[in-house]
Image 1 (cartoon, rainbow, N blue to C red):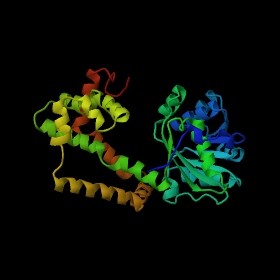
Image 2: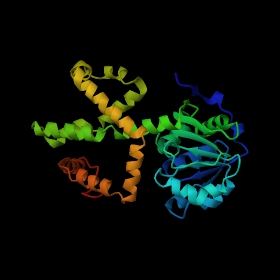
Image 3: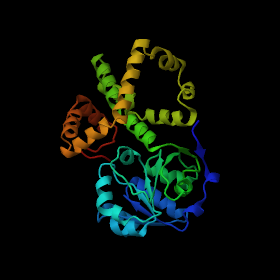
Image 4: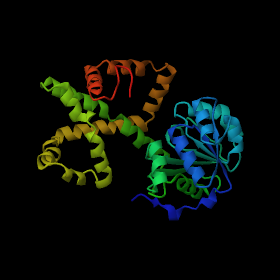
Length: 334
């Protein structure tokens, strides 16, 4: 059973005298910065001169260059994209770290795969919300909170866990609860959820139904375009994956629970495929593949993206979305 922590387990006094620096003022950065400030913490932002800089200034934060913010901060939230974080860290942040500083990651990726190796005189922790940035802010304001994964990779101060819990409380996560995890576990679970092929499974279903003579518009509405799936996902969250099924008709229940089961050999084949996905991540093969892709200026990614956008389903989707009023014309969203 995993270990959980809640508001009563966290004490903000462990970070009350610290200056918190937010590096990467995107959706997560903005939400966490605002929540920490509303929790009474001293927050600054490190940013280059771009739209995120202007946004942080507009939100009332003192905004510094990345090196200056690193110098001023005692706790550094590294909320930059995984692929650019190592370079930004080594070039503009690493030389300004002080003994006792805390590096806070929202993803285990760069530590687990060894792309970043912080000095041994800083705490290295993870605070990974299982919620998009807007939800981080909205559920803080509503008092509901949101779950997060936490981990301590390096405890130079002897107080890394207490500091992580205090930061979790500051952003509003201990209200719902945080779970003790690891940089490895967060990386595997996060990448796995992105790589199991959900988008392609939906497209194969579209292809099969259209091939069977169903109209593209009807198929798209059934599979995702109506928005019904949003309500079903909410029921998954609130009631549980199998408990929510009672909200459906008995015919639907039978189809989902009985008819859709794979035969034993098919089920084992799918399990083997999922195991290969996990091993591809855990071994570092995916990280090496992604690094090579970046070095090649995203050649494979751009080619596959063009292929996916050229699929007949996309044309049918655009036509349906114009009819539904979701787009004004072929290229502009409402």
